Image (cartoon, rainbow, N blue to C red):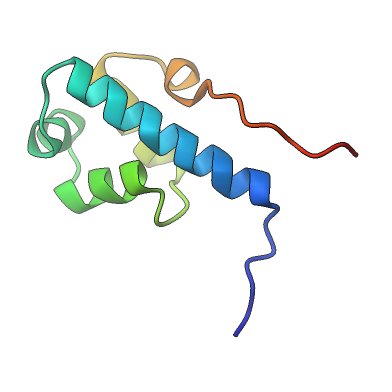
Length: 85
C-alpha cells in the first residue's frame, strides 16, 4: 500500500484549515448547504474541504472564502508546528 509522500505537517495544516472553514461557517450561522450555495459549489466540496479528506485546490479555497466573506489569507491562517529542519 503506497504511503502519502507529503510530510505530516501538511496533513495537519489541511485539517486545521478545514476546521477553520467549518468554524467560520458555523459562526455565520450557515449550514453546509448555505455555504455551498453562497460559494457556488456542491455540498460535497464543502464537506471534503472541512473534513480535509482530499487536498483542496486554490479555486475551491477562493470560492469558499468568497462565500464566507473573508480573504483566503484569513481562512488559511493557521499555525501547525513543524519539525525542526
